[in-house]
Image (tube, rainbow, N blue to C red; front, side, top):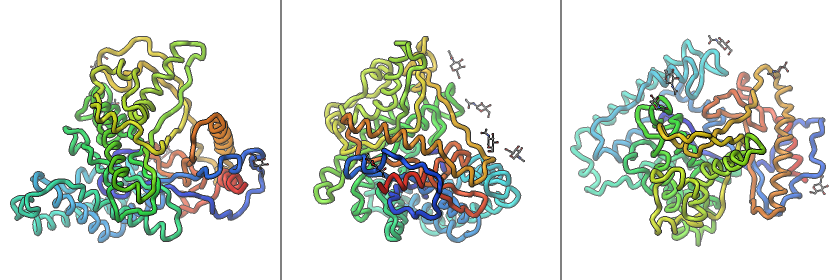
Length: 504
Ligand SMILES: *[C@@H]1O[C@H](CO)[C@@H](O)[C@H](O)[C@H]1NC(C)=O
Ligand SMILES: *[C@@H]1O[C@H](CO)[C@@H](O)[C@H](O)[C@H]1NC(C)=O
Ligand SMILES: *[C@@H]1O[C@H](CO)[C@@H](O)[C@H](O)[C@H]1NC(C)=O
Ligand SMILES: *[C@@H]1O[C@H](CO)[C@@H](O)[C@H](O)[C@H]1NC(C)=O
Ligand SMILES: *[C@@H]1O[C@H](CO)[C@@H](O)[C@H](O)[C@H]1NC(C)=O
């Protein structure tokens, strides 16, 4: 999942998917969690198993970023300088007032003094020193600022307009994004050369409120399919990861970047939770369709890959099992979460429930757009985390409307608390996770036997990681990371379980 990030952090955002066939068995658990009747060979030939991971969310990469900020002044300054140069070059025609860093105080104090923001460091956090690090970080941010100003003054400020640089032909042309992805991709490629089996690449784009008034134009999403020198070996392309999180969290609740919402939804400076989530989702869908079209017309024939999208959904069960109203609420919630993206991509339009309940706040596709969207996937990626209850909301909200109230459903959930006081040895005994994977894979297999065409499954996650809105307080990994002890890693019992599952 995503969260609001500074540009520096954003530059490190990429998502890698590893396969762990060849996981080092290391020390071996004596306990038997072996799946007697369920294993890899129970699944159809060619079914792909793996675990997913996200570079920025893995502590080791976080540490790289932190070390850059904390120690390697030159590197962070050069990195920042490269970044601002791209901005000067690409937006210089219209941006006449540049701000190098927004709220360095927030970055230094919330990130490194009380740990409330990423990277979540503080004396009382799992790593950090509130007495020194905020000062070191702000020192380096100041130096980065000074370097950016010098570059601007030396190279760009004297030139009247970018027209003179670009011969009048400036268009955003995605140069900036391409430059950025190039540096991302070089990380990925070096990983591949070191033997990491990378099966997917997703880059959160430069989506921010920069182009908000026009919506995100269809350019978004084209970079990674239009990028020929890139990952020639990648055969599965996902145009986007969880567009729902972007439109809902960014524009309904305002908890993710760009933090827009109505005043009755949160503390945003601007936004409209009753319309913007729908407009944003609409433009994301169109972007997806264009990206797919480019891939299909220009690349697929010789590259022989597949293209799809990854969308997120929860499952829902009625709050009162016997209530017909709650049973209907289940399907409305699914329409609003899953159908919002899946229906246009598969059928070319939003679900009828959404048309009815959202009315003219829900944008319309032209016939050509609808055709372009219809069937615009070779595969569908589904991220799912949990199941919620759904209860019918008795009184439809007519004032202060939002995406949250439009389905007329009140969802609720059960949460599982993390226990920090467990020893590593105890924490590795993750029987609940094994039970979860076992039951889940059994049900997945049942679905396949009933005809659902499922091609692969990636568990979240490979390592314990930094969760965007929960920090290090939750541990999803099959591999335990000891944050207090030089990030030492330990296979949890679920990793052994999974290994055994894969070997049979
Ligand atoms: C693997 O699963 C198959 C059926 O799905 C079963 O017949 C076989 O005994 C299992 N093998 C092991 C070693 O558990
Ligand atoms: C540190 O964390 C503990 C446990 O969450 C809390 O009780 C304590 O008040 C915190 N101390 C400071 C100085 O924030
Ligand atoms: C609508 O939101 C405004 C601003 O947050 C609030 O003052 C008002 O009470 C809300 N109205 C209703 C009916 O909830
Ligand atoms: C908005 O911010 C205030 C002050 O920080 C806080 O008390 C309040 O709970 C916030 N409201 C929401 C909806 O997040
Ligand atoms: C956390 O683990 C400790 C040690 O095993 C145990 O005594 C305690 O009950 C656990 N707490 C929770 C909330 O599960």
